[in-house]
Every structure is written in structure tokens, then in C-alpha cells.
Image (cartoon, rainbow, N blue to C red):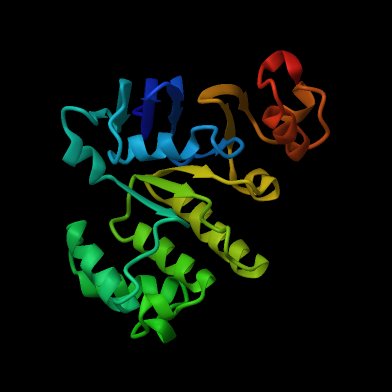
Length: 247
């Protein structure tokens, strides 16, 4: 089976700092994989390389067997993302933002697709509101709608529900899970919310100092390392020194 995402030997160095250190992993179709770790572990750098925003110093990224280096535009056209640190232009309305990004992504029948997403993400009452005037939670919903515009095969989510209230976050998780189960896509999801990770992720990868230390099923992985919960395991991974022997 063709992998939705295959990362092999990925490495990124900033000056003398190794941000991502020779990591390899994959995401299957209809699978949600959690990319976990403390701040500075290399999660966002990894996602930015997969998006083509950063160029890796070594390694390969393939999206459905399409090589990111040699066929970058084709690979990126199959992806989309949402992140709390990338708000949409605040001087444009919700409808304008979604319409413009829909054209950027080459979405057919953009107006119909935007209308579908406004309804799906409960944004119809905000469609003529400038994004800069929305609450952080409302902006997050618009970002998630934008991430679904081109029905991506690979959806990259960096703390997608961080600014949402619990009820709205639960609704958004359900929509993302529905996307993963029913469509052709897979999801790579970063979060510091271990309850959320346990609820949505089929597998998790624990990053520390740019390396993958642990990988497995979020329900069974803690017990394999003598921990009661995924949160306890996360805390253990975040300690210094960050090696498997210390867990």
C-alpha cells in the first residue's frame, strides 16, 4: 500500500544546533499519527519541511510516492495545514480568505466549496466578518476550514485546537477524525493535550532533541515504559537527559 507520507533520514541543522536528527516515520491512509514532544523538540521544523517551507539538509520526503525534492509542486498540492501560529490575513473577511485560498489551491467550483465549509464549520454567520475581528477560537475554525479546502490527502495540524473551548474542540476533533476515516487522507497531528491525543491518534511518535525516542499505540505505550498515563510518559520524555534509559 502506498504511504500517505513517508519520511526517511530527515535532518535539519541551524548553525550548530541539530533541530531534526535523522528521523524516519510514515503516515498511512486513514490514519492519524501524533507527533509529540516538549517545546523545541523539532515538531514544527519537521512539519515545515514536509510542507516545503524549509529545505532539509538530508533525507527524503514522499507524499503518496511523490518525491518532495524533484516534484515539489505536485507533492504540496496534495497537502494542507492548520496551525495556531499562522493566522489568515486579518483584513480579509472569512469568505474572502477561503475564496482566495481556494483559488490558490486550484479548487474547482470554489464558491460551492466555500459554502460547504462555512456550513460544516459553523461559520455562516461570520462569512462577511474580517478575520482580524474574530476571537482566537473562531479564527482557529476558519483555519481548519481553510485546511480542508482542497480535500488534502495529507493534513498537517500543529496544535489545531489549542485556542478552542472544550465543546468546540471536541466538535473539531470529530470533524478531523471523520476526514481521516472517510476520505483518502492521513493526518499528522501535534498537540500538548494528551487527552486529545489518546482520543484521536492511532499511533504516536515522541520527539526529543530532534530524535524519535518512542513510537506506538497511545493506549498501550505508557505501560510498556512503566507509566500509568500518556501524560506521565510525556513528562518523562521531556526530562533531562532525554534518553530512553532515563524513562
